[in-house]
Length: 190
Image 1 (cartoon, rainbow, N blue to C red):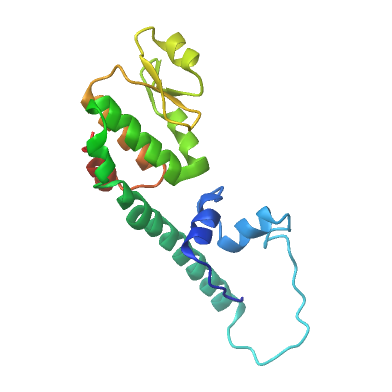
Image 2 (image 1 turned 90 degrees about the horizontal axis):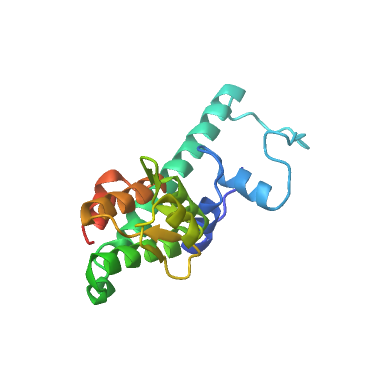
């Protein structure tokens, strides 16, 4: 196995394309490049050198490496990216709880990219909190007071109390991989 160094932005892009837990960076790149995944590729050694590891040891090493990459990816998202949402000075310029709520949702959208669509999974009992259109929210509740989340293409119901808005934001962040403690700290800014 060869190792390459990539800058943080490239790494975040690769990590954002993860389709399932435990997917290695190599598998993600193979999928994005239209190559067969590692499980499907058969390698034929061209030259046999002295064996350094048994097959079982090699499999364990690969598993450890993939686990480390997955762990580092999760840690990177939590510590570097989500912490960015704490203490944003522009939040003080927002008007009221609704303004701060929309601001943090928009910042989350910019941070998460494609993963932001997870907001559509956050719902109340029999009611939508997030949707792709204003009408979807109005169909769910006439009193929803739908507001666009900036230029994200997503809409959110804003008629809930501040505690519910905090819970909604926290749920979105947790679904995206943020730790519960950090998600609650971010949501407390509303």
